Every structure is written in C-alpha cells, then in structure tokens.
Length: 161
Image (tube, rainbow, N blue to C red; front, top):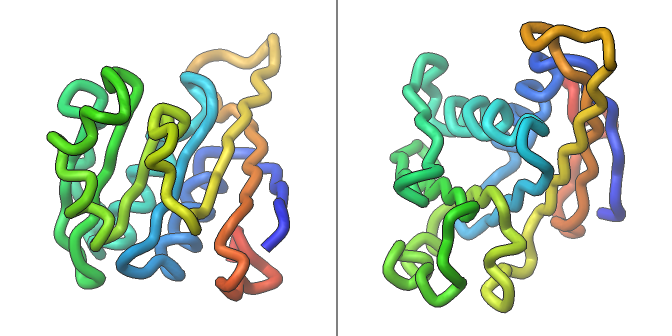
C-alpha cells in the first residue's frame, strides 16, 4: 500500500485506527510507531493491545523502563517494545528480539532498530496538531501516516470503520 494519511480528530479516532489495524494483524507482523513525545503512540498501543488480547480493560503499562512487555492473545504472543532508552540495536538480543519476530511486534521509537528494522513492516507515523488555545485535558488532533504491508488488503472505510 502506498502511504496513506488520515486526520484523527480525537483520542477515540486514534483508538479506532488501532482496533482496525489489530483486526488485520497476523503472527510475524511488525508494526512500527513513530512520532514525537505526546503524539499518541501510547494511546494507539493501548487500544491495539486491548483489541488483540480481546480484553478492553487490559492493563497496558508503558514499557519505557522495562523496554519490552509481552502479552498473550488468541493470535499468539505480542511483544510491545519501547526503544526510547535502548542503548543500541545490539541490546535487542537480550530483550528477545529474535523470539519476538515469531509473534506480533509493536515497536515505539523504531528508528533505534537501525539495521534490525523488519521488512515488511507497517510504519505508522503520528503527528500531533495541538492548538494554542487547547488545554491539556482536551483531545489533540493528529495526522496518521501509514506505509507498508503492500500485500495486505485494507478496506476503503479504513481506518475508522
């Protein structure tokens, strides 16, 4: 699929995108989340994991300090990596990167993978568009740009079906 861009006006839109992608994700898939701090990566990851695990109340802590969290789902193991603090791609071996590739991997800060970036993968870049008069409790609109998974059919009403 060529790059597609969507405006996500709310947290709920970001969650719907995550649920839509979770529904077409299979073992062996890699989903790579990019964007600055506050872009919505954690909101996306939480909804994605809750959908795959079929548990809307699943506790999904950020793996910022542990670097990886694993989950069991009906589709198999899911590995959620947050590589913000990674000391280099060679540290991935200690985190079980090779084993993780048999399951589903969700990676925040994938640019830290360097040569270990999986192909094919779905690249999702979230770009926030905060308004100067918006307070912290309000939804921040964002743009989501998807590229990759050329062989994956996605419906025309994707991502907000």
